[in-house]
Amino acid sequence: MLDNENDLESLGPLQVLRVQGDPDAPTVVMFHGYGASAFDLYPIHEVLVTDQKFNWVFPHGHLSVPLMPGYSGRAWFPIDMAALEEAIRKNDFRNFADKDPEGMDVARQAAYLMLDALGVPWNNLILGGFSQGAMLATDLTLRKEELSKGLTILSGALVNESLWKELAPKKSALRFFQSHGEFDPILGYANAKKLEKLLRNSGLIGEFIAFNGGHEIPAPVIQGLSRYLNSLS
Image 1: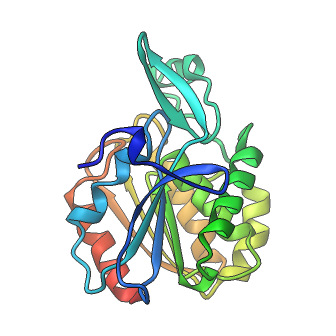
Image 2: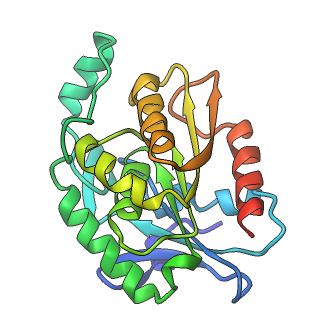
Image 3: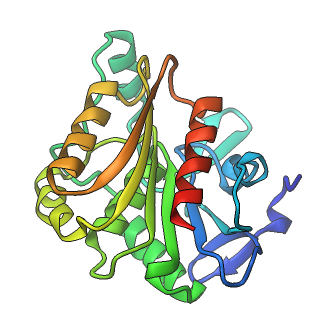
């Protein structure tokens, strides 16, 4: 198990963890959530059951964010934690759908440069992530002119709704995988369903797994993600 930053390598402007698979297999790029790191999603490649030996890239967020005294994590764009905690207390889930989150543009530029440095054709890339990493992966996928091989949205959310609604029909040939906890206290379930509806109304075909839980990746999601990746091979 990798667990320290000496295991990271530079790829363009970002640091990443890489897992080499079959040279001819697709590459899965998984962006972690707020306050986590490249190491957070790394174990997922060890528990998925896939026919092919996929190549994996786990980017390390370019922002360092304080979590508690003496501890920090990584992120792709800032989150107002005080406002988020107040929303959770009031059971008033935050809705990012009306805007591009502040700092998303910087994350997007860094991610595209990293993907360029990776050198894998877009039609052999499967982008995905968890929480704000899923938002970034969706944004990257929809904005890119070329069609990627797949998109996985784990506990993500709808952002920049008007732009995504404009871009999504151009990706109608893309198949996606989405999961969300019905009792997610951080990114509300209703917002996730709104994203699913936008994608389906734009002609995309995908699977949505709802689970009895919160902001997490439980076993049914791992099983569903395995099925999805196998269907793309």
